[in-house]
Length: 112
Length: 111
Image 1 (spheres, one colour):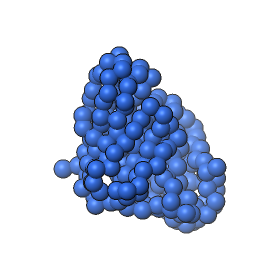
Image 2 (tube, rainbow over the protein chains, first blue to last red):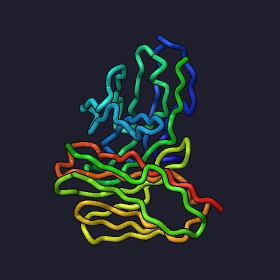
Image 3 (tube, rainbow over the protein chains, first blue to last red):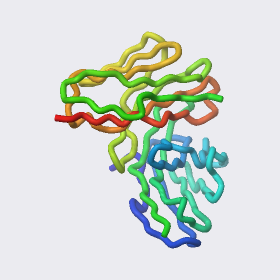
Image 4 (cartoon, rainbow over the protein chains, first blue to last red):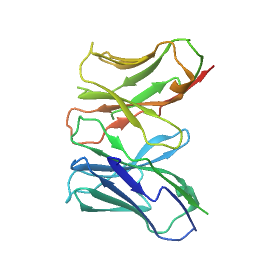
């Protein structure tokens, strides 16, 4: 089984709909992250959480929200999806501030 | 502001043609430099961590090196299956901020 699991893997939704992307990890790490990736723009950080009670905005948090339900679970919500949120979304986890990140396989989201 | 810059953005090599990818960083007091491989549509896969200048790590045809201002990923005699995007990321001294990622180098190895 994968260390970091994202669901769904692919999703097509309509403009204005609310959608939730889910992430769970089996590494036992405290730190979790959500990124989006667009061609030519690299990985951009949306939100991150260093423990269950900690939530921090990243560089592109507008239009998104997150929930840290447990140490192993971190979900990302788009309250009202818009077409420019079409992207590949990745969840990741790290043990600490200077350790490698483990990524999920990604969720390809299309907003039409 | 901590920054990581990768060059070139894209690189096309013939099979067997060795080359290097560059990752320069402005993180003062670097606490770790990470290399990842990413295949299209998939999550980045961890390759190496380097913690101090002069350190080197190797895996098959890949060797990562680190200086005080940059890191190189050397690819020796690449094969088509080495085609991927290679990402680097830096950890800052505080440990209280996420890794800073570069935008990646897209490598194509032609048979």
